[in-house]
Image (tube, rainbow, N blue to C red):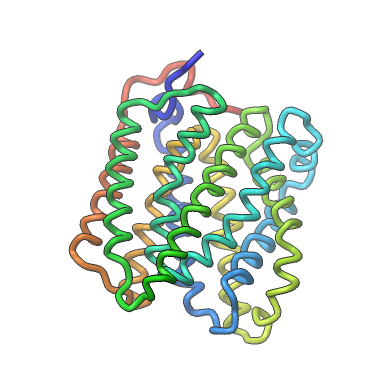
Length: 311
């Protein structure tokens, strides 16, 4: 049976689901600017592998018992392994996208396409059709991210920018994949913390070889150690705990729209701190991203029994 999805009043309870995801997205919005100040000999692959691997170990450590239980559960193990594949691909594609196309454009593309992929996954797996409200909010926000991308950083090599956009699309698909898989594992009866620990713990194991091969320059200066530590603790460890908590109340397709705050924050920081430049269309894109998120999170109809938490 086809059911409606993504109406915020059906799958969230006020700020209980939205606020943790918003805070997580704000933290994620700082990643590109922080990574920009790493030494030149630190590759984006090393940055992505270190951030997710270290953060993943921490997430597993604070929820080891529940994470292991989730991994032993036949109802959730398949989703967790599929999501871990997304966790493996995402940071490698995401940081490489920012390296090639610029902080703002890489972030915008990586996050801007994610809601579309999330909705496709929900339709293919659960036969859920999106609501008109979600479609309008997503369309407005995606138009915004397109405008942001077309107003990209001045001086970026055209060929590198194209490859950066391609990698951003790959990052968007992998992000939608592990978000959807997380939601499904939580729906199987596991706590959000247990699911995050299992998902990113397995992802950390997959990323460990990449870190061993590329991570040498990360430990050769105090600044690179400090920046990597921030990326692992803030935008990774704390942010994903918050994100998992939000997924108790918010569908993955809606969560990926809310996290479009991230490219907006990344763009502002890229302009103010990194020095990237954007035209009027880029700033119009920021406004449209904000409008799309506002359309999604504004109060809708009265809550029903579907508003009960997933745990």
